Image (cartoon, one colour):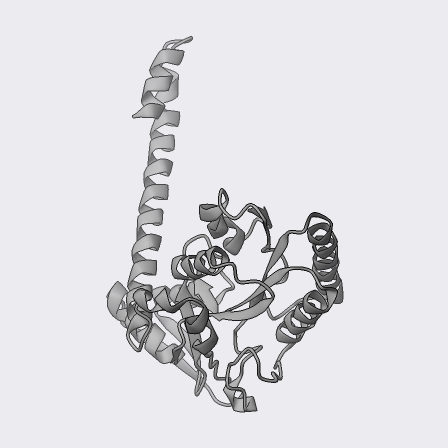
Amino acid sequence: MEIIGRGFIARHLGSMEHRHPHVVALASGVSQVDGVSADDYQREADLVYETIRRCQEKDQLLLYFSTASAGMYDATRGCRGREDDPVFPGNAHGRNKLLLETVIRASGVRHLVIRLSHAFGVHQSSHQLMPALLGAVSSRKVRIHRGSSRDIIHVSDAMTIVDRLLTAGVDGEVVNVASGVTVPPEAIIEHMSERLQLPILEKHIVEGDASVCLVSLDKLRRLVPEIDELGFGDTYYKRAIDRYVAEVEALDAAEGSTAQAAAGSSSAAPERPSGGTGATGRHHVS
């Protein structure tokens, strides 16, 4: 697999980099909703156009990551979260993704379009949903849009599904990759608070402008029935959050140990005899 991009999804696609040699994964583009310029959207479109041309020349399959967020599937707009239904994107991000999906399908290129819900895991940008909520819980001050809800999925589970879709030879399809369960932010925050043992001290409720992300897994289950092994259901979000928090804590501990070792190495450096490269090497290995 050729992976285009250096962000969160591209990084996790690396686990299948040596499989699916006929696939070009386009995991680069606009990932935020606010503060995006027309130039940003144009750069993403140009990259899609160029990747289509390359895939057509080499008869490769274009794996494109679209969105299954509330920007695409908002139940308050009458959306059922199905790939074959009309959708009415509620923001510029959703409209842009739908437009690029249309370009890909109309081009005739071999393709698999993944409408991905809120995937989360370590090494994710702080503006994304779950890192932002984790940061808010850690500060013990949260802001909640009453009536909103989101579909969340651990990135490792999302990558497992993508791998199985490619292994099954799915081609020419738009497929939702999500947990299939919509979760209110209050429930996510409550479980994070319990997991971190950090009671929320300040809660600000925002009324109005709520969106409900509803994603159907009917098509995905027909294509890859074994997704039920991942345990999606009403309590999935709790297990996924527990896994995420444990991964964040492990990463923080590892980075802290590395920083401590580097500080120790720096403070000890003047005491080493000049030319002591062997001692320095042993220190770094340990």
